Amino acid sequence: MNDNFVSNEKLLEQLKWRYAVKRFDPDRKISDQDWETLEDSLILAPSSYGLQPWKFYVVTDEAVRKELTEHSWNQPQISECSHLVVIAAKKDADRGDIEKYLERVIEVRGTPEEELEVLKGMMLGSQKLLEEIGFINEWAARQCFISLGFLLGAAAMKGIDSCPMEGFQPTEYDKVLGIADDGYFSVVVCALGYRNKEEDWLSKLPKVRYPKDDLIKRV
Ligand SMILES: Cc1cc2nc3c(=O)[nH]c(=O)nc-3n(C[C@H](O)[C@H](O)[C@H](O)COP(=O)(O)O)c2cc1C
Image (cartoon, rainbow, N blue to C red):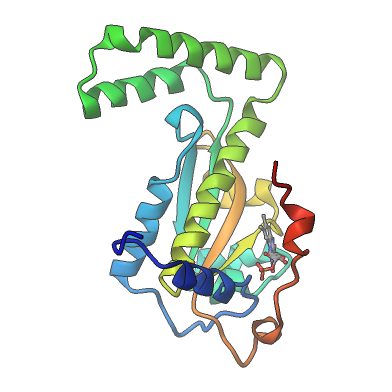
C-alpha cells in the first residue's frame, strides 16, 4: 500500500457521502481555493485523443442563474448552489481542432512536428469517420460526461456537494450564456455547493443501487 494515496475506506466513505443534492444552502459558498481545485479537476479530465472538445461555463451571477432556473423546470439547485457549471461540447469538431491540439502538444512537450504525423493521420481518419456517420457531436457530448465524472468525484473527495443535471433546456442555455455563439452546445450541468440538510429530504435516504453481482461480471 502506498500511504500517499487515499485509503479504500476514505474513498468509499466520500463516494457514499455524495448524493444528488436537491436543496443547497444558498448562504454557504465554496472557497476560492477549493473552487480553483475543482476547476483544475475539470481541466485534468481525460478525453479521446486528448482533444478536450469542451468548454466549461461557470455561472455565479444571480440574475443569470434566475433566468437559467426558468429553463431548468424551476429546479432550485440552479439558484441555490454556490457555483453552477454548464459543460458544453464543441460543435462539429473538425480538422482545425486537431491541428490546434497538435500545436499545443508541440508547445507543451516540444515534440518535433514530423513525429506527430502518424498520430495526426489517425486523428483525421477518426474525425472523418465520425463526421460521415453523423456522430461527431455525439462523440463530443460523450467526452463531456467524463469531465462531469471527474468533477463529481473531485467534489466528493473535498466534501463539496453536487448535483449532476440534465433537466434543463439546452437551446435556451446556449442562448443565455452565448454558448452557441462560441461554437459549442450545452450537454450537462453540475450544481456545486453545500447541502441544506433540513430542506433536502433526499439527504437522509439510503442509496438505491442494484446488487454488485448484478452489475459486475468477472471474466
Ligand atoms: C446525467 C445526469 C442527469 C441528472 N439530472 C438531474 C436533474 O436534472 N435533477 C436532479 O435533481 N437530479 C438529476 N440527476 C441525479 C440523479 O437522479 C441521481 O444521480 C440518481 O438518482 C442517483 O442518486 P445519487 O446521485 O443521489 O446517488 C442526474 C444525474 C445524472 C448522472
